[in-house]
Image (cartoon, rainbow, N blue to C red; front, top):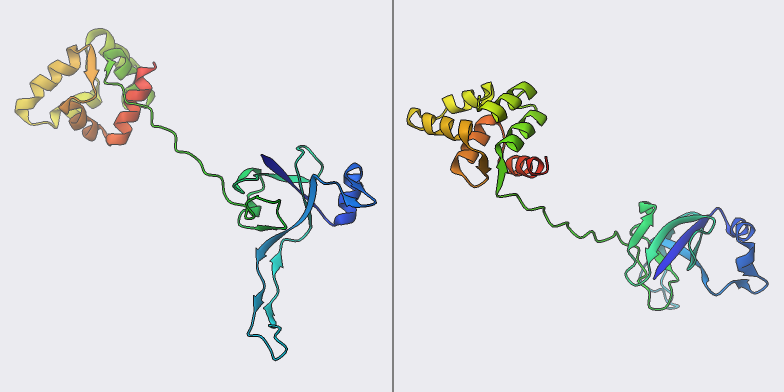
Length: 216
């Protein structure tokens, strides 16, 4: 269940804006006047009369606040989940304030919403040669013309030739054969990690490249 926090300059302004919710007996039952307490009062040791002195007054946010169960009312600044106190929408400045009073059974302190982490999209096991070349062109690693020549004829782009040239001599031929003639590129192939590093892609960036290429 959601409560809706309304803010006005003072109670007179709230009554003027919400006259149908206020009568001779005060606010209607589904509207609750509240204070937003940001710091409780600090008391000292009790005096002889047993009454502790106030060292620091409690701090509240300025303005007149109402909690209402109905949405869309004038003055609404936030929506709050009653059971948890989580801010669902609205002004994040109210986070950390305590509602005084609060509905029976409600969480009194407004807290930040809990955002569930989204499951990471799986990395495709393989992509086609056309997808690989096209995504490298999208990222600017190779030119569009080089991507077309690579996918159509197996002509390797300059950046790929430079990366192959950085490999040990006895590994260059097999790498060039694979890259110029393969129709599928496996993400788990050892050469993918090696060439990615030479082209400036870390592990995460390479995963992103594979994900993006798979939908082209």
